Length: 346
Image 1 (cartoon, rainbow, N blue to C red):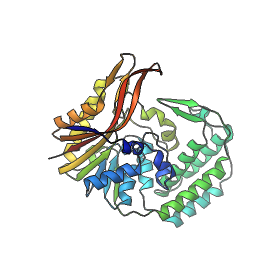
Image 2 (tube, one colour):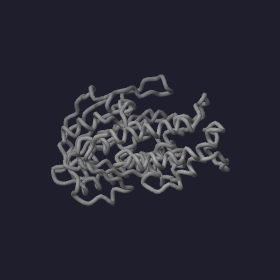
Image 3 (cartoon, rainbow, N blue to C red):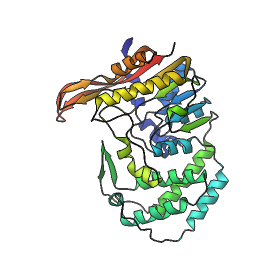
Image 4 (tube, rainbow, N blue to C red):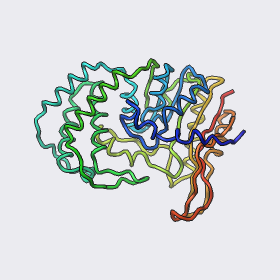
């Protein structure tokens, strides 16, 4: 297996390039990758159907739709599934405008709330969020999902919540009026949905087990990194806003390196099941550093090894980014790679 630098792709392994792209930026997902990385892998793999088993906010699925390639995504995180469905949906703009117009007529009333997320919102913002949340719950699907994503992205933009690694913190700052901001954002989303060009059929599911055997010929994904983020905690406000909660952790956790790789081994076996013969797999992953033990874990090499144990052939590892492993934030203790692992089912 060859290991080589592909540092020019490094900026593409972040969500930053998506922040200015219509539809892609409907929900900011800090841990995601860019549309251009997916485009590059579609050119490399030339698939007829793509799977992303950790689809996050739907970048892989949306990029596939834009290129006319059918795709399927799964994720345990409710807000991820909602965002993926809404971003890749085919929308009737007149129906959306009709239900949005109905929300403009809603008269203010207070909705009681004493839950744990109260501290993340200015009082008047929270009151409007709760009111619109209740009114949107009365809208029939699929338009309800569209409005829920607009509500969630608006609420998070003007909240005081600050995602600091694995922790949600309060960072107070001046915020605009919720109603005006929400209406402007929802109208922009409708306009962008109409303008978006894409023909690839997309599906979103909760579990890999719902994907049929030998039905995809490419996988493009990025699992949660070892020792990094508990998504169910960091995105708990978003899941509350859509009246959902995630079940457990997403194959991650600083508490158990062994569990992480055990779970990822199970995922790779499932990927082998759903992949056709000749299918390509691209996995973006970062290595981990445990400062208490002063130990680097080379996750890319370990996952490539687990891929081989699942009967894939590990073809190459492309190093996208390099950074220092830091102890006490300042002491350099080695180098961490962020890599793209390429596997093939032969």
